[in-house]
Image 1 (cartoon, rainbow, N blue to C red):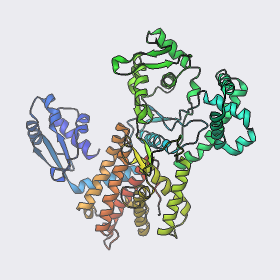
Image 2: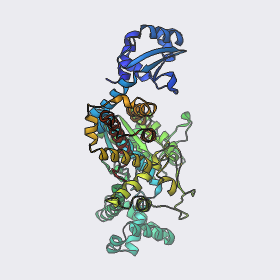
Image 3: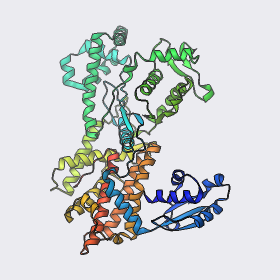
Image 4: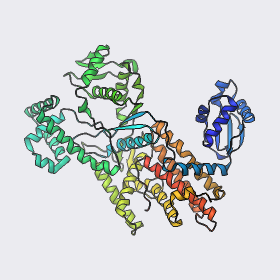
Length: 567
C-alpha cells in the first residue's frame, strides 16, 4: 500500500468517509512549503455540514498519522501533510524495484474492452503527414489503456467505399495493366485516379458508376480488382506502420458495412426518427442545436453517418465495449455529435460510451498543407528523412557508436512521434526539423539521451538496472537532498500521470511527466557524483538511476517510442 493509500485509510477512520473517495481528493500542493500532499476540505463541506477550515482543524486533531507521514497542518480549508523524506524515498524505490517496467500500470481495466478507431487510411491514396496524429495518438492510447489492464481493439476503419473506386477500376481498364500497377504500386493508382478526373467524359463517368454498382453487388471481377487495390494500399502503408511500431486488430472499413447500414435505416424508420427533407432522409436535431443528420442521399445511397452508426452497433454487439474511441481531427466534431446523438435517440444507452478524441491540424515548417495545391508531405518520406537526419547528427556526435543505423531509426522516428504527442492533442502542430531533432529542450532526443545517460552510468558501475534496484546495501540518506527528493517525487507521480492520460485521452500527460523527470534527474546528475568511494551511497545513487531509467523507458514506450541504451 503506497503512502496516499495509507493516508486515505487513516483519513477514512478519522472522518467516517470512504477511503477510495478520499484518496481521489488528495493532491500535490503547488509549493513544497505547503506540504507534500494536501486534502482540500472544501469538497467535504457539503457532506460533513461544516466549514472547510473547521473540517481541516478537526481532522488534524483526530487523525492518527500513518507510517511515512511526519506531520499534518491545517491551513485555511486545506489539511497539508509533510512526509518522512527517508521513508518516502524508500517506498518509491521499492515500488519501482518490485514492479519494474510494469510500474505505473494497473488492473483497473480488467474485464473491460476499449475499441480505438485510429489511422483510418484511404484506399488507393498515399499516407501524408496529416495521418500522423491520428496514428500516433491512437497507438499511444492503445498502449496506455492496455497498461491499465483494459483489453484493447485497434480498428483501422478503412476509407474504402464510394464512386471513386468505380472511377479507379474504369481508369485501370482503359489505360493500365496488372503488371504496370504491381510495378508502380500506390503511385500508379494515384496517377490513374488523377488522369480519370482530368480526362473523363460523360460516357466514362457512366462506366465508372456501373463499376461501382458491380462492387455494391459483389460482382466477382469487380471485387477481385477492388480487393487487389486494397492489398496494394495496405502493403504500402505496412512499411509506415512497421517504422512506427503500430498494429491493428481489425481493418474493417466502410465497405464492411455495405450490407449492414440498411438495418439502421429500417430501425430509424420504425422508431419514427427518419423524415424526408429535400428528397434526402434525415434525423432532425434542431432541438440539440445541430443541423439535420443526413442518413440517405436523394438517390438512396448511404453516407458517412449511416455507415458510422452501423459500425458502432456492430462494434457494441461484437466487442461489448466499455468505451469506443474515435481518434479523428476536430473538423469532424459536428459529424460525431450528430451520429452519436442519433444513436442516443434510437434508445441505446451506450451512446454515452462513444467518445470522439479530436486533435489539431498539422503543418510543416509554417506551411499549411494542401493536396490540391500539391503542397503535401508524405508520411513515409517524413519518417525516412527523420531517420536520415538523426543518422547525420549521431555521426557528428558519436561516430564510434555501435549499430548507428538502429539508433538513428529509434531517434528519428521517436523525434517525430514525441513532437506530435508532446502538446495537448487539440493544439495544431507545426513540424520543424531543427526543433524535433534537438538534443536539448523538451524533445524526444533529449529524453532518449537521458535514458542512455542513466544506462551508461549503470554500465560503468558494472551492475544491471535489476541488480541496482534489488540492492539492499544502500544508504538512501544520500538521496535526501533537494535534487534527490525532486526525482523521487516525480517517480512517485508517474502512476497518476498514466491514469490522468487515460482519463483525459491525452498521451501528452505521460510525455510531459517523463520530460520533467529527465530534467530533474539531469539536475541530480550534475549536482552529485553518482559513483563515489562510499559503496552504500553509490548503491543508493545507482538505485535511483535504475528507477529513472526504468520509468523513462516505460513512459516512452506508452507513446510508442523506443529508448536507446546508447546514443
